[in-house]
Image 1: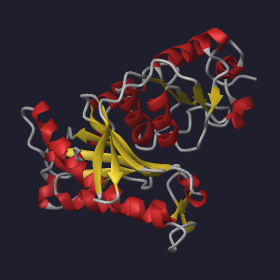
Image 2 (image 1 turned 90 degrees about the vertical axis):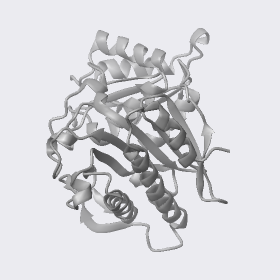
Image 3 (image 1 turned 120 degrees about the vertical axis):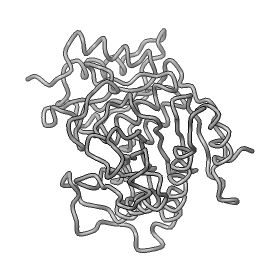
Length: 336
């Protein structure tokens, strides 16, 4: 049995000039995830379900667990002294840590503290998404530019899924590994070494309730997924949880494609580039899959604002390429 801490220490040899700061940040994230997991598992027994009286920057009602998870990750990262600042999907602006140690730190962290929070009150899988960048501003208080880097500049990314078991999956751009929380010892243990996504799969994930608002290319690809064809094992099964972490995690293990395209009401897409799409794109690509907006690789996009949105098609290589063929033929944007 290899614990997450042991694995992180072993992997430091992959970074000959590493100081150990990145490894320590990953351990701090795992600690915060354990605390959040504890509260998720008590939801319904304590007063942590339901909504607060506040709205987040996106105009969405803030769940109590959203707020709790956000504060846990901020506290864990600020106390470490190894991170100069964070940006959270729940906060309008980035937060620069002002202690002497933090201002000398070389990394910033971005995260979605509780992805799929609409599922909290109905006991469906939710998750945390995180991403780490090396700062590009001079030492001192971190700057906005540190957070608005292309996804290709991430030094690490991962997610935690709180489901039938709790798992932390992460990459430092040297493969993808998954760790399952053993509640008997309170440790994440290596359970899914060197994750490789199947080249194809039998599942597609999309919110078909918005079908009329998708572009023709997306609608035609969904029809393709639903058609009977023995040679390609179609029709594919529709699986949509409403939590990006849960849908992408399933596809990593079994193969499939996750799609959140542009719609008539959201022509720029809905999911956030910095907090969701970039980390998940890196994770999927490290497992051998692809991630695209329909026009270009997600990791090549240059963010211009913290809460920028983008479309995403990500998953098994062959399925993503098939979706692109339909988008190239029919177009990905909505047209009457």
